[in-house]
Image (cartoon, rainbow, N blue to C red; front, side, top):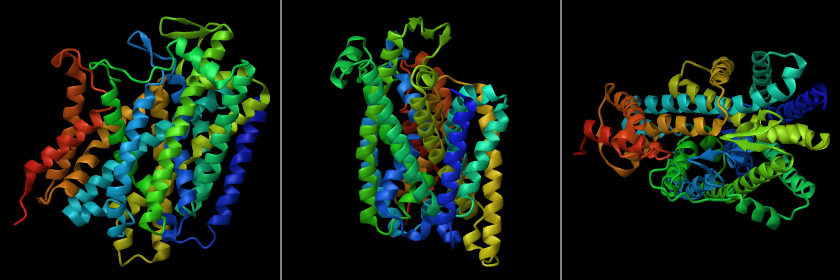
Length: 500
């Protein structure tokens, strides 16, 4: 298929998004940018959040993990253990965190830390969000840009850095004015395209292999591709580790994340916001299961085409197509051009929601939490808008730098990098928020809170590197986030004071 034809669809899709942004950003103010004037439709927010949460990582990396080897066995559907954990985490978000945010009438959720503990905790929490979301968003962005680069732009002679800069410019243009007000609508559009792409690809491959879904699941099961629960306590994917880790990941990466909560608190009232979270949860479970089934189908399909395992590699014509390379390879080289086009549209639909919301949320957090433009009486609306735009552009350059770092690392399964990073960067946020919610203790001034929040992930890194030696083969998996949060909680307890 012509790379120029495929790239024309990328540009056409961007023009569509730009048109939506121009329409929705009419008469936009700073309040529109930050919280959508608190009148977003909860159903649109719930649906759009699916695209933000799934991103290109779920679209490409989750299907690719199914046929990976872990400890001499296929990874299979073990990721679904994490998804089960998500359910428990989202219940906590809906019925503990959401009511708290509405009660305090927050624009930035990190204002809670300011009201509860003071400026140092507030700034520290916001800073950890900025670090966490920057790395997480750029890792997701890198994955999709890298797919576009390998399968389209390399054939056109376009360097990777130029591709990354062009994609970021597109995102910058359609989020520049409207912010959250625009993103609620663009994310809904993009989630629709992404899910349509998933369903079409899944059923086309079933048709191509002349299998029913039941027959395909039976074939996958016979090959060991559908295993969900890992009962090896020492394994990184032991089911309790994944379920607990999934719950904590959901709380931290959604409930304590300004990007995700920025959309939720743009809904007019608590009950609608809770409906949003629970609707989103139910849909997310089903969609993740479909991605795992698709992953099993892709491995079956390529095995029938002659691909075979050699060690931990899955080789076809001498090329290793395991992990993140599998879905793009099948869609663009082994299926009809129409399916390849659908894949590209779905892929970029997964790309933009994970990046546009992050860019907007980081801009909001930096302006509100670090620069304090809303509390600065000397700045009028136009001065605030000018500052916001400078910050917005600056974060686009930060994104570009981080993407180039991930290009240098170039891992075959980016989802593992994202979840590992989350364990280190979201842990202090988890500890800070729940220290405030679960205790009545006070934190003093100075840099004690910042020190604790830096020390906890450092100790976690040392523990992760030595756990197998110190703990008789035990490997730390996604429970790292919980350990990090507990260490932060313990450190905050030590430097806190009782309320008189």
